[in-house]
Length: 633
Image (cartoon, rainbow, N blue to C red; front, side):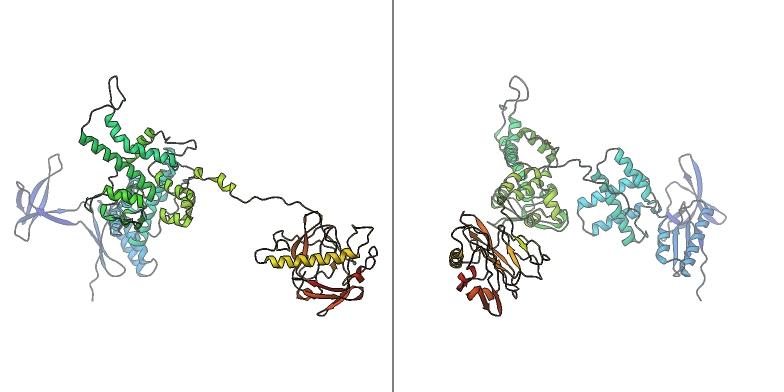
């Protein structure tokens, strides 16, 4: 039977060699040493024991008490109470044993017990362990430095010492103080994000927290607090900047600094210095050019070596390592042939481990001086400034102006979200909006005529037809799929119909009103040009009306059994204007069509008669005979 372990508290004992000159004496059968305690000359008597090698060693105790107990799983645990007072340590021991009992009977979960045990642990060891986790996770050095720096600053300012001190309220107050101090929204979000990722690690990996206390920290609005909104360089500004970058190192060395000729280029320098300064200017201009033509960030460009540059005509590229890229994935950066040739000439004969370009750490300060020398304003009228990262915005804006598809531009910029490419990294001030508007097709308002009014004899279906589009295929505007022969055939049919109708008109009144031809009881009164689209999907027009083509009008209708929709076509009137002609009767009305006495007809089961006009006697009789309807209308 396992012996029951009694919970207890104790102080840890350690041994160390006896310092030289220490007084050792025997007392009550034991060996002791008298050592000095502190700087005031007080002494303390400590026991002396014998080490494994036989040498004397003094025994020292820890300053705080430790608790020893058996947990719910029966495992003996030793926990630091952090108490110097014995009674306080005993109270802590009772808490630990009570929690173990509650876990054993199922009142609380084991994870909650572990989290409670971690609560009184110092915070710094957890931060150090989190740093080791980041190193093992192979995140970039810059990311690790930024996250740990932000985390340690907040912990120090809020005076967090123990894990149980982690709380959102002190951090909210700290963020409010930073707002009053003028810290930007972007910087405040950086500290907030550093705390959140550390809290996630404590919950998911270390299991020392039940929930992340930082997830609900307020996030600052970066759009409402822009500090350095950037702009893209124009083509002219970029050329001026590259020219100044090449010349300024040498010109500064040639500039006379004092005397009557102060400011003139006349100082004497050696040939070696002149060659070195010329190469320095050339390399600086190449740095600017590479940033603009590749979209690389400053730190990414600074990390490149000669071995990462691969040159081949039409296939030159740079390999960016995952640890050096912002997203930690690594990329292949395609290069233009002209830029690739300049980089090859620059690094010719250098070993693979050499930096491709020596990007100075103070590039922003150098860029500001180059901008001033080139006469380029640091901040424009819109309040947008030029800095090193603005080179990347210049890249995206140039791609947009060149008409590169948005998806391809996103690939070149290596953005995870196309919104970044189209909004944040595109300078709207350089978009040629005026030219884009001028390229739009002209839109003219058509000259409107009168409408066709449909009147039913029963006055129950009086509804206007819907407007047919003017772009529908017609006899004179046949669309993309009709040949000129079909158009000519239709024109001949219309001329034949015109002769038949005009022949029946009265010679006295040449401009007679429209003759209404009744097929099945409904009538159409012509008042002008009207589309031929039916106003109903369930009821089709069953009338057929004619008018003289030289007056202008329509020929419309549909057999009773037809289900084909109307289509609009156009005819030319006597005045040269175009009117509309409904078209689209089913195949019943296509081909040779015979009219009998009094205008009666019967074809494929569809019968009817042309009505007579009292003002035009003999109209129906004059239409006796054959007529060909080409294409159906």
